[in-house]
Amino acid sequence: MESPPLTIEIDELQTQLCILESHQEKLLERLRHNEAKLSQFQSLETTILSLNALRELVEHVIDDTRATFDLDYVSLVLVDENGDLAQFMKEDGLQLENTPGLILLENAISLKDIFGRAFRLHLGEFKPKYRFLFPGRDFPSSVALLPLVRRGELLGCLNLGSHVPSRYSPNMATDFLDRLRAILAVCLENTKNFEQLRRTSLYDTLTGVNNRRFFEQRLGEEIDRAQRCGDSLACLFLDIDHFKRVNDTYGHQTGDLVLAEIAAQIRSQLRNNDVLARYGGEEFVALLSGANEARAMEVAERIRRRIANHSITDHNQNTITCTLSVGVAEYNPEKVSPVSEADIQRFIELADQALYTAKDKGRNRVESGGIYQRKESNVVLVSV
Image (cartoon, rainbow, N blue to C red; front, side):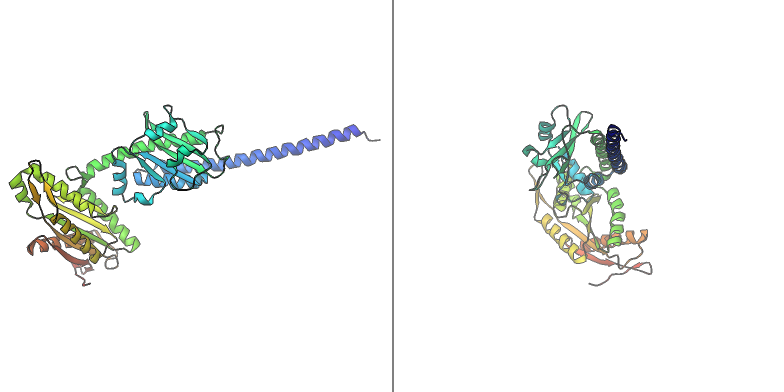
């Protein structure tokens, strides 16, 4: 006769075994999940470490972090006391108004109110005081706020948000998040230093716009972009009429003031993604991406009128007015394919020749050199 206690004991052992197997499966599933997350994190880390440009860093951090961690909200806050970061990104073609996940602050006061002196990351439920970190009308239920600190300086913060209330809690492990914020802080500091060095070598300190070296680098990039997208590209050569008279009459200090003011006025008439550079002396050059000859002529004429109607007062209360002569040319990728270095130079020469035509016709005017087209190694004007 079977012993009932033994049967009960076997049943209990089988039940416990099933429970252990279930726990083991859950543990293995958790390990597989962690391995996948670690792989994704390492990929994100590698990408961030490989970036040099501030624009690329901003875009990748916002987009890749959201994808890697499957988040509903990601924002990047940067402290930009002097406006340098905004200028770097604008010069690199980033449209700040179309980057909703990026927030620039004039100082770190509001961030210090959140993170305190210890700069500890915050995990937990969303609070009303976090609203400025998540632009928009909708807000997350739980958040992870990662202060970005380097050498004791609060550079900004990376903010992660989820609709799931339990996604981030104060007692959860923060190994990945601590590592991410440390890496991002280092990359942000390095990128800022790189941008400052690049700006020093590619920036005209007198006028506040880029220099000829920067223009020549961007010219090739803009030509490549035009070829890829099939868009037109316009070039404007702008020269201050009779600028020598300003220096001779009022002195070089006033001449420098006039150069800087005219550069600022030209810049104000261009888009953020247009390129403006001082080409040499009193001559400037601009690249208008996506602009054809007609559009470039409109912009050039608007700039010419702006300068002609603008007066400048120097330190001796002298009032100076100047005029501009402008030459325009269009590069149409359909007319030139494939593009060569000679094509690029002849395109620029076409705008330069149009500038000299404007000067020959009396100055204070805009002239077009037409559309650049390669034909038997010669420049041909295409009527439009």
